Image 1 (cartoon, rainbow, N blue to C red):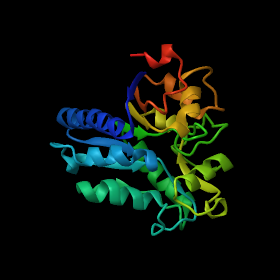
Image 2 (tube, helix red, strand yellow):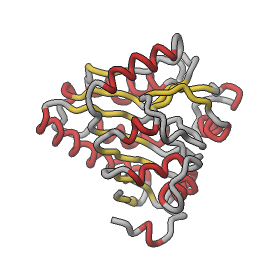
Image 3 (cartoon, rainbow, N blue to C red):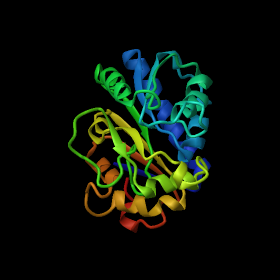
Amino acid sequence: MQIKILADKPSLGRAAAEHAAHSLRRTIREQGTVRIVAATGASQFEFLEALTSAPDIDWASVEVFHLDEYVGLPITHPASFRKYLLERLIHKTGIAKYHLLDGDIDPQEAVRKVGREIQARPVDLTFAGIGENAHLAFNDPPADFKVEDPYLIVDLDDVCRQQQVGEGWFPTLIDVPKKAISMSIQQVLRSKEIIVVAPEARKAQAVKGTLEGEITPLVPASILRNHPNVTIYLDNASASLLTSGVRSAP
């Protein structure tokens, strides 16, 4: 695992986007196409803005999946992750091949359909974040580290739901759905490369738990330390609680 610490959120976003663009170009050059998983949420704003502006990426060769989606939320809702990805990634780049998790009408069918698609071939590159409770995708603690299904229907805990209120996606906790479709931990780990974007002071405790101490379902993102090709991008605020040894890791 590599840890990159930048001065602030915009710098972090640009650095992670440069890395991601390089990986996309290389993979397309080597194999003709690239399969990616894209994260959503406020932590990804600057990253996706920089990535979609990067030159010389053949977006027509990119196939997109996403990590998670609320159950029972229409695509027209401001918090819909389908809406987010369409507006911030897919429509901006002209990506033609994408698989959206529709949790509004029949979430079980979405789990089956998109699950079949993502299992058809390996995922090359996953973009992820870390939740305030250290969730990875919508796998809140205690996360299931063993289930092999690519997507699950999960219950969201109150810390996760309150984060959505704090980020401005919902007016109150009552408005946040209690269930979501989430990519499983095992499916996240199947990606050949993972780039994690985790800025802001509110993530500092989760970042510390992810990178220090025990790898445990109580800190879901800690499982990333078992993956052979992960780079975690932090800013000074999100890295503020790390010990000096971890901060200086390559």
